[in-house]
Length: 327
Image 1: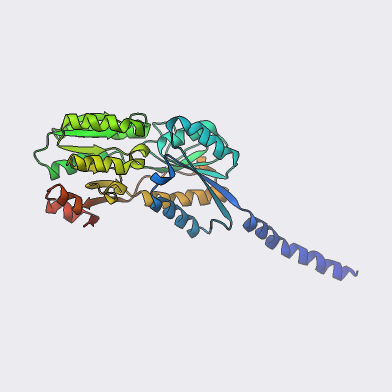
Image 2 (image 1 turned 180 degrees about the horizontal axis):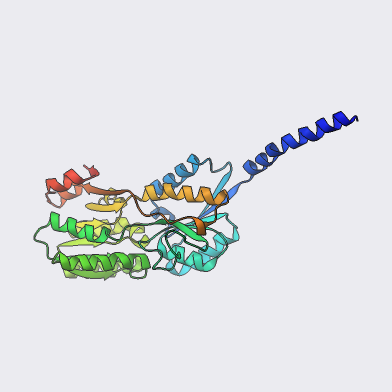
């Protein structure tokens, strides 16, 4: 081989190297684990769809360069086992919706990146060091705004000007929901409403909670943000309907299931935005360097069919402000 031929061969190999490396990178299948708080049947399909759509926008295609492993925490005492199962799969990143699941995942691993969709104050609950610089292996999105509880009481006051007693169904075992409760309780005093705390830490607590609410005979019900609540939204909505009890919920999914009203941030929007965090981490970003995002999209959703069944007249002022009215 002549010197010229050898130089041409070396140059050809050098120029081909970026293509070879790129081919190796695109050929690698990355693994995303999802820890859903609750049974599979309770997970709203639009949340899965929003996440997959967001990932596709960044070029991550399930079955091509991405594998999604989903596991379900069906019992509160089973969260450790479910997380251990996910960890054995050695995922590149874990998506953890809800403060309790995120906290449990953080306790189980300090090395695998975790993208949270957690409660109102992940700093107070110890998930991150600060919103701007989370530190550690957890980052993501704040799951709801602290003022949504007070907003729900304002809606009740506008819907029922003569209301005096409101029951609040919430999960005191969820540190994120505790922020909601504290803000809601403070707002009740300002609105001259007697607020009665009714706790449901697990789905098995719901029957007793329903009996308590029925005995209280409140004028209205507000339901706090929590995986237990959204996972049992059909039961909660059916109970409120059976009692002809006007209720304001923390998620639009309740209203889609027949609930009266919700003022909330958009869960599908949060899951779509979570895909951006997953994308950046898969491309090498450290979760501790990615700032936590606050909710940006809020909506008022009203179910007029439910209002009619309860013989309630929704004030025009509320209808005009509604982002979505279900007929």
